[in-house]
Image (cartoon, rainbow, N blue to C red; front, side):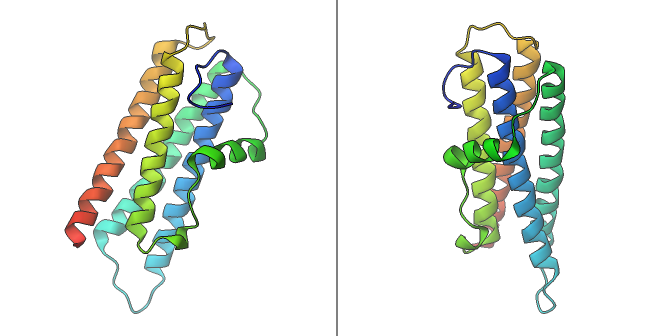
Length: 166
């Protein structure tokens, strides 16, 4: 299954929404890890703006997961095994090891951009479909478009912080 193929069933929507949940979990976990690494250094005074960005990213990811879970609940579908969904996420939207980046902000930017791209692809796949779903299409798209815009805002915030550091 590919996020770029038109969505033809509730089952596909559920699987794709679950992919979004996994992606959000990854973004939240990485932001949390970076936040902890900043606050645990005794000889380093972390930038408050970076700390706030990481806190916000974690909170936002949790909110996104809740919104996606609500959509899945509305579809009344059984979920797919986490490890199977995680593999699908890694194939298309994988992020390298957090330590592969020289800077926390580059890693955070990668996560925000990956999430934005996922939601953009998902919206396009739903819009390309003429299938009938058991969930209101407009509500589904409105929710996903709002999340995508929040991810775009996250990209802008990280980019702005990166510009300030130079």
